[in-house]
View 1 (tube, one colour):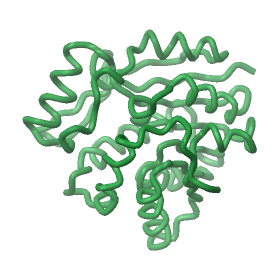
View 2 (cartoon, helix red, strand yellow):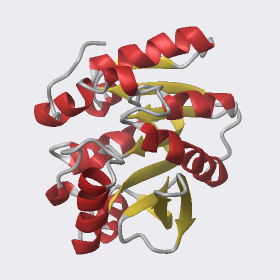
View 3 (cartoon, rainbow, N blue to C red):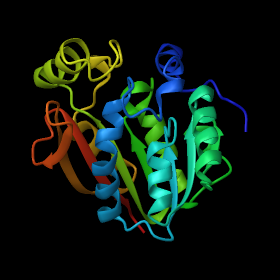
View 4 (cartoon, rainbow, N blue to C red):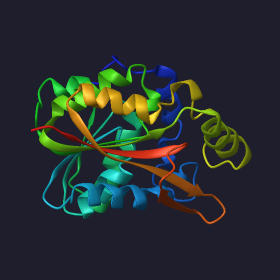
Length: 236
């Protein structure tokens, strides 16, 4: 499949192209992803047990979550518009003998040929980086089987999230590279839930994801005011 240009912010794409060599470095610029990955994995596996499920990881980056889900017994495909990240994912898959398949494409383009294909779709920290989140969500609803599960991780839009996810995480604590996020693109849980209901999803859960920087640990809680995970199920 060829790289697409629709629903891609080229500035956002460039931010992550320069991080291609860091995806699998637990002490590199993307170390926070390594810390939160086990929590995300467990949330997904509890929402929809992964063993023998067909899973699509949209916005897979370098494949951290994709490989982790395969290790839980899933049959995984990863999509990303960032060719450099996908190359890093493929290289690591070769080294680790992973069978995850990776494609450089958008979910919209991929959905044209793969309707109602997947039991589970994951979309981690991607919605806040695309120009049209509703278009992406519509494509995910097309790709998911009836009764399938969609797991999303994204950021709330409010003063607290600006202080925590941008000022603190990027500029004070250095947990993420500066400029990673644009607060205006953050999505309130109510907005996301409304769009999903319009696409015939039932929202099953919304949980806050709280990062403890000095402990290098991440926990779930009932406060989705900054980072949050959402589980939605497609109607049969």
